[in-house]
Length: 124
Image (cartoon, rainbow, N blue to C red):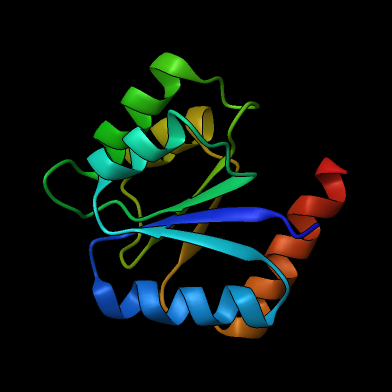
């Protein structure tokens, strides 16, 4: 069974591309354009990994992470940040405590495949 990866990003084009790429490289994507909806979905489903954008509305990625961690530990639902901008020092420290990896957009399909294979190999 393919690993289920949730992508949370408010950019529709990014969601469409990630949905296509993840399917092609052998994963089961679940996409959400809204952090609140994603948290609600996670209440009844359990993805194997979340790819999370930081710059979103109505809640940003940091608020999504805070709410997620209130209910689930870091190990229960791992998160990789998927961001278009480099992190500031304070954000790097925050990320180290809450996420397993930071990926920068744009990411090539081959690089994403490699990162996910490495992550899931370690987890298996």
